[in-house]
Amino acid sequence: MLRVAVVGGGPSGSCAAEVLAKAGIETWLFERKLDNAKPCGGAIPLCMVAEFDLPESIIDRKVRNMRMISPSNREVDIHLDNQDEYIGMCRREVLDAFLRNRAADLGAHLVNGLVTKIDTGTARQGPYTLHYTDYSSGEATGEPRTLEVDLIVGADGANSRVARAMDAGDYNVAIAFQERIKLPPEEMAYYEDLAEMYVGTDVSPDFYAWVFPKFDHVAVGTGTMQKNQSLIKGLQQGIRERAAKRLLKGEVIKVEAHPIPEHPRPRRVVGRMALVGDAAGYVTKSSGEGIYFAAKSGRMCAEQIVASSAGGSRIPTEADLKVYIKKWDKLYGPTYKVLEILQNIFYSNDAAREAFVEMCDDKDVQRLTFDSYLYKRVVTMNPWQQLKLTCLTLGAVLRGQALAPSGYRPVPSAVRSAAEVEAMEAVGAAIKGGIRTPQTARPSVPVPETSSVTIVTGTQEEEREPALAGK
Ligand SMILES: Cc1cc2nc3c(=O)[nH]c(=O)nc-3n(C[C@H](O)[C@H](O)[C@H](O)COP(=O)(O)OP(=O)(O)OC[C@H]3O[C@@H](n4cnc5c(N)ncnc54)[C@H](O)[C@@H]3O)c2cc1C
Image 1 (cartoon, rainbow, N blue to C red):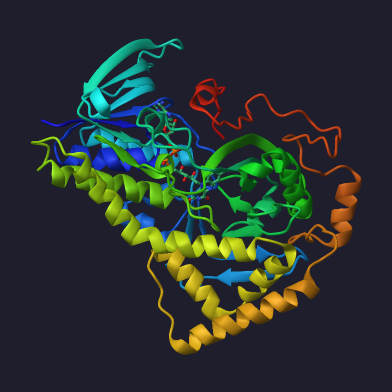
Image 2: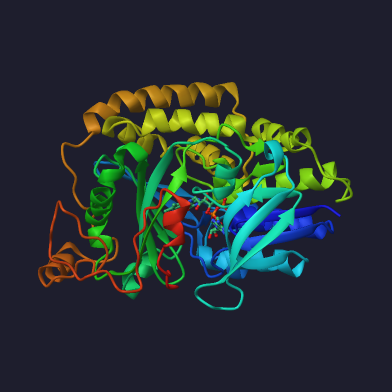
């Protein structure tokens, strides 16, 4: 019987392990940290709920209104009128634990272990020996162990050790930073079913910043390309300042940061090793979405393994595994391309960002955006809609020049009068805790002990990451 190790117990690894275990294949699912809270906005499209059979309890909030906020603070709502439609907001520690446990219930051996080294055999063709530190006993130091397998699925995220073992080649990464902020009930109620997306050079020179609602807090974050990594804390300060009046009396309960891949690795299958999810590089540009694509790629890769191994009775070849890559690129290649073009056009400067937000006011644009995001289907437009969209883009881009602001102001509170906000600010109702930036050097409450900031660029550093406390 075929022996498969899936390294990484995030959405990609768990969804791969689920399919393999269901088919009766001998499957080990390695996760270094069973209570891992992957730094993430946690937004998932509606189609993922049904497609991956997720229970309602996984969803903290059902967002039906996405509020886009331009550099000049123009606010445009993209609203879902159909009560059955929503964007799901999850805490990753909850989602990941569910998917992982489901794979284990179906027969995958869940190993609480950190894979430290992989012997790949002659010409990387296997069999493969994984060296790992087993933490199942609960001891902090763990037990060194080895396991021999015929095939490896690398689902170990942006700092993938499997990618290194198979010489998959590098990719550029973006850096994302996020603070989880507890808010008073009034402010939290405003975010009940609403998420915000801010654009502007103050919050990111090439991406967007977000305020996403979770169970009892909001996740406030931003991202930027690796070349701007040194700016990231200043950009986080930017979103804190723009959203300040909506985050009054907020208290930071967790600070987190992580790389986001910007494009697929040069090689995603080598020998009998295949990469999925972030390890492969499947996050989209423009939206920075990766959870659905991680889960889907894990599933598609595993389905290919099951088919090519005739249910686990023979070892698939490299060519067999590459069929998964072909199918993936055919299915999602155009989506990645379109979103890359959109990011290059609309996130390049404040005039273009003003144009982007203005365009989102159009009902056809809204339906197009939501349909392609929520259902992951290619939306076709009739010629009239295409013409209208082209005119809108051109008009908005031209007008954007005039609308782009020379400076940035905080958006007004959505739940309090200006006078009330002013009075609160006068007595120091600013966000407590979290980042300190050299730009402001303001005296701030120190980061709570339970928080950690780790911008990791290599697995070695990730291994040393301090324990991240739950929310
Ligand atoms: C700040 C931020 C916000 C984001 N917001 C969103 C969002 O709102 N929506 C969205 O769709 N996407 C978002 N993303 C992207 C999303 O988080 C990723 O695309 C997704 O987590 C990829 O899943 P994965 O399973 O491939 O990898 P991961 O989720 O990174 O999982 C990898 C797993 O492997 C484990 N692991 C790593 N190395 C080893 C090892 N050597 N041995 C054993 N285990 C190991 C890790 O502990 C981890 O659990 C965001 C990313 C960031 C950084």
